[in-house]
Every structure is written in C-alpha cells, then in structure tokens.
Length: 112
Length: 119
Image 1: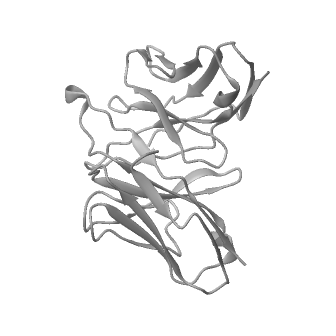
Image 2 (image 1 turned 90 degrees about the vertical axis):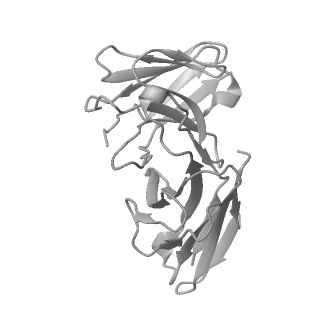
C-alpha cells in the first residue's frame, strides 16, 4: 500500500474554506485516493474519493495533482460540525481484495 | 452509518476473560473488516474477510480470532483478554472492488464502535 503523510492538526475559521493536504508520493497507477473523517467517538465516515481527476460532491472537493503524488481535500465553508480527524488513504487492490489502511490523520479544529 | 451494527457498544473485561464482538451489515457487502483505534495510532486493521467463509490477517492480528460463517456477520473474538487490548474497535464493510474501467464506489461503511476496557 502507498503511504500517506498528513499534518497532525489544522485550524480553520468557521465559514472559511478548509484545505487539508495529503502526500502520497509512492502511489501506484491503479490506486485511488480516499478521504474519510471521524467525528469524536463515532465511526469513520466516507467523504470522497478519486483516481486522477478532481472530484466534487455535496460534502467536499478533492484536488489531485497531475503527478498524483499529493492531493487536497477542500471543505468550502467549514462549520463547527466539521471538526473531526480527517484521514487520507490510498486503497490497495492486490490479489482481488481491497484493504483500507488508515494513518493518524489530520485533526481539524473549526474555530467560531 | 446505517447498515453496520456493532454489539456491544461498551464492555469491561477482566484479564483472561473471553468475549466476542459482533458486527452485522445488511448491505450485502462482500468485504468486512475489524479495526482497533488507540490514541495517537490511527485505525489499525486486525482481520478482514473477502467473503463468507473466508478470513485473513491484517496488521495487528495477534490475540484475536475472527469468523465469517454468514455473509452479513463478522465476529471478532478475544480468547484471553489482556490490558493491551483495551481499545475502541470498529467494524466496517464494503462492496467488492470494481475496477476503474467500470467505475464503482468502493467506500467503506463503519459501525459506531465498541469501547472495550480490560482490567
């Protein structure tokens, strides 16, 4: 599995865009970038995923660099409820199964 | 997180006791996973299953056993609990991987967690 590197913590003012970076310099061509978040004491929640192109859904946008070595999750208008740990992961696709490996993530604190 | 249910939500065990954590999903997913989460460690994969009747070791399998007798259930067992197994345990499930050529959403759905304390 490709390793991912994320900053341990970030602050963002409420109403502003939160930009969460992730490095995955050893990603291989068929590996997707996924983002999950975990609000305190709850199970992780899927946010978005992508392979090469930028993606957007009702929760966030995902920007993947052309060389695919890094990506940024964008929460366009952060709210207090977005305070959570955000995990950037790369999905393995070896031997027909998928294994989801989580790192330590970025703790995002949205400040009023 | 509709669809993935973990029981129990909380449990306190004495060292050496055994217990089984149950994970149930109603989304007909092929893949199921057990993770543990400790402070500062992120989520670590214990065991996983790629289908009914199959199991495989993850990153930290020692001290745990699993079974997938029915597609919808994935059981995590602790035969002889140790204080080092104090943790929050999360179960997850997902669809079979579909290649990029056909697209496909392979997100994982998580349960709400089981907080286990071994004293």
